[in-house]
View 1 (cartoon, rainbow, N blue to C red):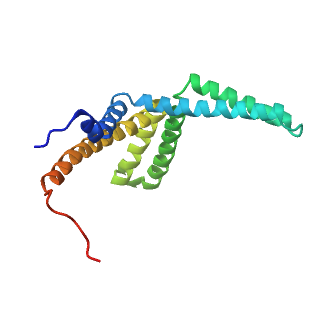
View 2 (cartoon, rainbow, N blue to C red):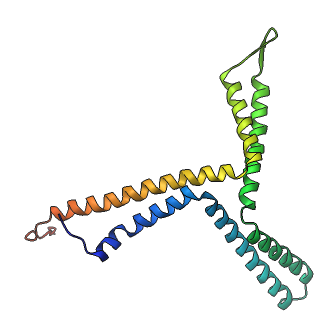
Length: 189
């Protein structure tokens, strides 16, 4: 068994360990990723607003008011997003919830069948009802969708990091064991 030095271990297992740590962050604190995306978009909007403002003041007089107006809108929106970084995740969760409710309602209306006065419950009707219920949950709890997504991504990243680390240690070990220092690998020309 080959002994590794600390620099070799860091080189060998640094990225897999970082992948596992990032996966744990996504799994244990999924709102951190949503907030990071919101803050990143906020900073982009602030910088765009500052750039538009500078161009509005220093640029040509043609449509100066329009550029300054857009600069103020971008800057204010960016500052507001920096103060409320989860707004985008909430908005997307609510939009997804409304879409599921509408689609589920349409499917339920399409698949409602009666036999006499008795409602026939089919698989399609049950799936439509589940879509409406999930949509209602997402409208009420809009961050649930982003949390679920980031939890799944966190689990995938943890598994990928562990697999990559295992592969690097076992793969390197197999390569090191099979080498014979007296063999020269040369191609015939």
